[in-house]
Amino acid sequence: MESILNCNTASIPEDNPDIGHFIDAELQNCLEAQTLTLGDPTLIARIRDVLLQGAQGMFLWVALQITSLCASRTDEDIQEALENLPRDLPETFSRTLQRSRKSEDDDLQKRVLGFIITARRPLTTGELREALAFVPGDANWNPGRLINSMYAALACCGCLITVDEEESTIRLIHHSAKTYLTSGSMAPVPIPAASSAMAHAVVTYLNYGVFDKQVSTTTVTPPVSGVA
Figure 1 (cartoon, rainbow, N blue to C red):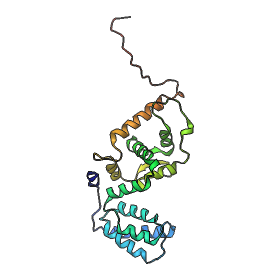
Figure 2: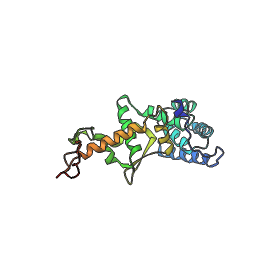
Figure 3: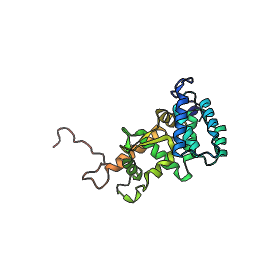
Figure 4: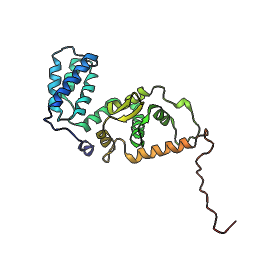
């Protein structure tokens, strides 16, 4: 895991003056939307200071920490979170996956992220919903396997993915998230495994009985030249 946590991520210079303005704006938006609630209003100053000290010029890091703080129920929870903020993006991604994943969601989380990473273009929520319903090798389409609430299912990936509301497409939140997920010997979503799962899903889809023709698994020997 150490090799994953040390992966390089692009960052903005630590002395970037815009980071402070960004923190102020994001915190203000969260307070106004009441996604961040404080029992002690003066706590906002400490939140700002801690985020500014730990940002290292990374806007994404700040945004993800604020999202995490918004999930805190009490001022004490917020104080404890501020004392133990992740140091960088890889550690943030790791905590996000652990926090968002329930024991029964481990396989779902890997499948969702695997399909998103290996797709040639951003998948729509409908396409991913169907892909998750495939059972490799089962050529019988069963609509009963379709996930009823995709947004509830996507919650297993936390804030590592984002949904474009206009196009209903799903993407990773940042290229550094893909680097974290696929790099190293202990990558959470190894590319070979994810690519294999995608290939099995495609072959299964092409073999469904709803098509006039199915992909043949039989090897056809070509005719010998000159033989009628």
